[in-house]
Every structure is written in C-alpha cells, then in structure tokens.
Amino acid sequence: MFLVFLGAPGAGKGTQAAVIAAKMKLAHIATGDLFRDEVKKGTELGKLVKEYMEQGKLVPDNVTIKVIRERLNEPDCASGVIFDGFPRTLEQAKALDKALDDQKKKLNKVLYIEIPDQELLQRLGGRWTCQQCQAIYHEVASPPKKSGICDKCGGRLYQRADDNEATIKERLKVFHAQTAPLLEYYQKANKLVTVDGKLVIDEVTNQVLKVLGK
Ligand code: AMP
Image (cartoon, rainbow, N blue to C red; front, top):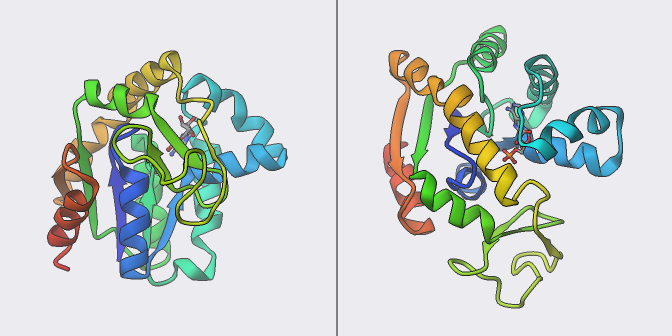
C-alpha cells in the first residue's frame, strides 16, 4: 500500500506515519528526516539543502524528486510506503504519480491531517525531537519521562533549528501557498481522506486505521 500523509508542519504527520508504518509493515519515507541526515553528515546534498531548511523554504523540486526516486528504488519500498512530508508541491505530486507508475504501482490514499494554524504554532514551539530515532515529544502535551531523553531509545532530545517562531510562520505560509493546492489535486483523483488532527495522538491513529480499513 502506498500512502501520503499530508498536513501542515506540526500536524502530526511524522508521529502518525511512524506508528502506522510499524503496524502495517510499510517503509516510512520522511523527506525532512532524509535532508536533516544529509545536513548532519555534511554531504554535498546536505550543503545544498541547509539554507532552504533554515529559512523554512522548500528545497527545489528537482532535488527533492531525485532523492525520492532513488529512495523508492530501495528494496524495503517494494511492498508499500508512507510518504511523510512529500509531496509538497504539485510538481512533486505529479512526479510521484509518474515514479509509481514507472514501477507499475499506484498511490492508494492521501490522508490529510487537518489542524488550525494557531494550534500548530503552539505545538511546534514546544517540540523536542530525538536525535537518534526521530521520535517526537512536546514539553506540555506529551513530555518524555526523563527530561531531554527519549523514552523509546534513550537518545538525546533536541529542538529543531527551524522550530523557532519566525521560521515556523514562514513554513506555515509556504504550506498554504504551495502544499494546500495538493488537496484539490488529490480530491479530484478521489484519493483524499481528511482526519481531525486536533485529537490526542492515539485517537488520530485510530481514525487513520479506520479510514484505511484496518
Ligand atoms: P519537515 O521535517 O517535513 O518539516 O521538513 C523540514 C524542511 O525540509 C522543510 O521546511 C523544507 O525546507 C525541507 N523539505 C522537507 N520535505 C520537503 C519537500 N517534499 N520538498 C521541499 N522541501 C522539503
């Protein structure tokens, strides 16, 4: 099964994608995580994407599409993938359709995790991410048992460089301008399902499983 998790930054795409991918034995491809990893390793790609990420802007489509095409060729993607944070533009959405088509596969569903901007601002401001396994915590809504340490793997938690107020506002602006048009694209393709992202994490997961017929 090939699924896209669509939503503004902070909507819970990453959290839900990780849970659902584990439950349904699907590969989890998060372009943001892929890019952060390249930045950390200091590769050519990392150097190229760093500035865009720090400014809350999108990495150019040709770069992002190439990364996804390569990742999709890896064996763990053969039987299904959850795309998290990709596609983010119409061009990326069309490229994904083409890449899957080339492999005689198709996108099954697009889950839009809907949440008001005001709540996103609060969520992203208090977000802590595990350096090791990328698990996500919130200092008020879902704090780790031990401050600064990941419950799941013991890794250190950090605040993403782009989780500051100015960049968060820019990322939301970019979402509304460039990613929100995908809702209509997938609606027309009869693939769009909307879930309420304001609920607590487990309830959102239950809704997602329900719309997937699980
Ligand atoms: P995320 O972790 O999904 O919030 O992504 C963090 C940053 O990585 C974004 O603000 C963009 O700069 C970049 N990025 C992630 N996914 C994409 C994408 N599909 N297209 C362009 N840029 C992306």
